[in-house]
Image (cartoon, rainbow, N blue to C red; front, side, top):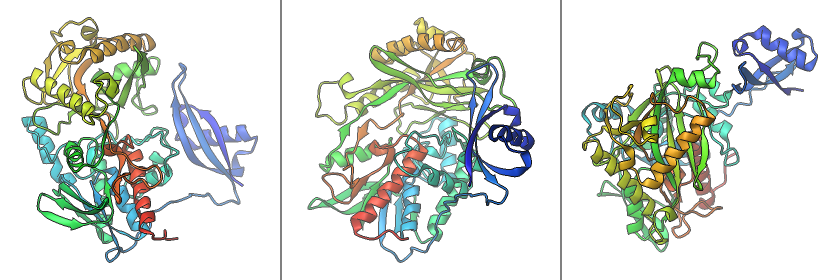
Length: 521
C-alpha cells in the first residue's frame, strides 16, 4: 500500500533521482532499491539562509503499480443534445463548456471579443499606438483576461470544487505536468494562447459552438424566467438556462441587468498601484543574497498589513514579468502584470492595493454602482494626468513616501510609457495615505524593498469586480430570475483562473440539476 512521505531536499537535488531515493529511504528506514516513488507536491522554503525544497512523494512497493489517479476529459458527441447558453469565453465559460460536454449537453458560447490570434493585433495597437479596442483587449476575447495574463493557477478555493480535475484538464490541453506538483503553479503568457485554442477545438469537435464578436445586448425575462437573449442588438436566441460568465470588466452587462430590473449589488474591491522592482533585487532580498539560477526560480513575495483598519496587500505578483495596459474603455488607463513561462524578464511587478468597501465611499446603500463609479473615476483621473493617452502616471516609491515628484526614473517595462506625477495629487487621499504607510511597513518587513529603484504605476484597479450579481447558495441561480446563473469573477464569485474555472463547472452542474436531467455515470 502506498504512503505519502514529506521530506526536505536541496534545490539542486530536485532532479537528482539518487538524492531523492536516499532522502526517502532514510525517512522510511528502507533500502534504496525496495521502492518506487511519484512526485506529488513541492514548494520552496526560503525562510532560512539555506534554501530548501519541501517535497511530498507517494511511495510504492516494487510489487505495486504507481497510481496516476488520472481525471481525463471525457469527450463525447453532443451536437444533437440539449443546449446550454454560456456568455463569455474566459476560464469560467470554457470550463463550463467542457463540463457541459461531459454531462451530455451542447454548449453554445457567445464571446464579445475575438479569438486569441486576432486579439494580438489589437494588443499591439494598444501598446504601440495607444488605441483601445473596447471589444478586443487584454480583458475581452477568447480566454478572457487569463489568456494574456500571468497564468497563475494558485487558488485558496480548495473547498469550492475539484482543483485537481481543473489542473489535469489544463495538462491534457497542453500545460506542463509541473502544474500538478508545484505549490504555486504557473503556465505563462506565451503558452496560454495555444492551450486556449486546443480547448476551443475540442469544444467544436464535440459539437459545441463558440461565436466570437458576439456581444450580449439584451436579456428577455418572462414571468421571472429566462426566455431568451439578444446578441449584437439584432439576433435573438431562445434560452432556458444562461451561464453569465462575462468577467469583472464587462461593465455594460451590469448596466444591462440594472436596466432590466435584475438586482445587482455593490461589492468591496481593492485599488492601488502596480510596483516594479528589478528581479535581481527581489531575488537578493528573498533568497538571502542568492540570485535565481538553474535550481531556484525567480523569487516572488507576498506582503500584507493593516493601515487605519484597512488591509493593504500585494496582489498578482509577477516575477520576471512586465506591466501591461489593460484599459477596456477609451478614457481610462489600467495596469496589470504578466510573466512568460520562464519568468526571465529582468523586472518583477506586483499590485499593491487597498481594500475598499462601499461604506468608504458613500452612505447610499441603495446605489449598486458606487464602487464601480469610484473605480471609473480613478481610472479616468489617471488617464487625464498622463496626457489622455495610454501612458500612466508614475512615481518612484521613496519619492511617493516623501510626497516628492520623481525627476528621473530608473526604468519601466510599461510599453506605452510613463509620466512623472505626484500620485498623492491623483489618488484619493484615503488610498494614497494608506499606501504610503504600508510601504513604510513593508520596508521594515522586507528591508531593501522601500527604494527609489522601485517605480509605482497607477492605477491597479481591476483586482476584482466592484459589483456582485446575487445568486442562491444552493441553486446558484439569481434569486429573482429562474435560469440565470451568475458565474465567476464578473459576478463576484471567483478570483483567478482556477477558481473561475471551478465556478464555471459548478454553474453548469447546477444547470443540469435545474433541467431535471441525471448526471451521466
